[in-house]
Image 1: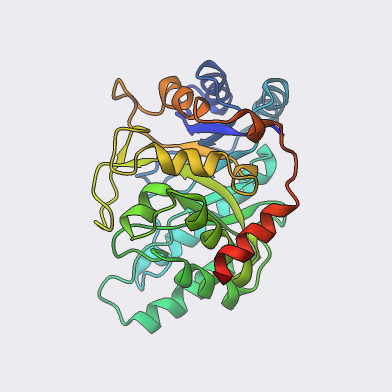
Image 2 (image 1 turned 30 degrees about the horizontal axis):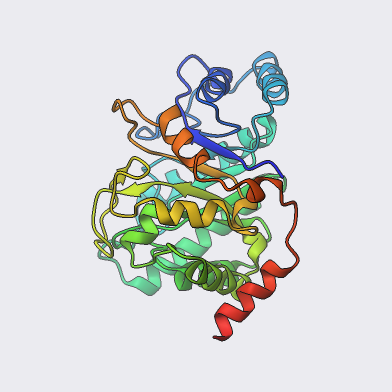
Length: 301
């Protein structure tokens, strides 16, 4: 089994340039923006040649999967004009993802602000339904867990959304920094087993499709979202070592969104640290029949 370790990288110069940047830092999967994350305006649609180049280079370099990260401006629970803008930009992005062979978009759902929570939740479900209905079946809508008081700060809230919408394309991205900030620590196998079993029992473990590997500048349960380089924050190396060697957890790609040791963003040094945590048997194991039972026993105990 090939463990997929990647990074969120710049698309300056075009989407294909991001693939080259991934190669240079030793990444074999990738996350990118489809445009500026702080602007509603999207770039002109790519022509066929640009798409062909991207697909060919992705195959040649064996960088897969590739994910979009949706705009930071999105709030699917908004009760004003932001609501429709959020829907429109996600529909645009998921349609582009289908053309580029991008697996889907990782989305921060937004927040209820000062609105009535039930009213805002109904709007959230309505808007997510619109996005799913107007985007291709080949791409996923990936909910990222949040820190602070944003939507999705715990698994129970994410499970509710998935179960209410009942769409197979709804998936989960788990960010280690956000989870740590929200009171979830995965620093040993028993905790990780219970975490995976909770997902499996409620929505199915196949819904977990991606990890964001980020250390935290802030202490446990701080409800603050500030990423640190791997091993330089309060999470430390044990969580990353546990996840990267778990036979179920490490079947999912792991993407860093770290500040970088030189302050310029995700870098080779962060990936090399993670690669150094991989035990030889973890990289060789294709499937561990006992791993699911391990999770069950951890939950029962």
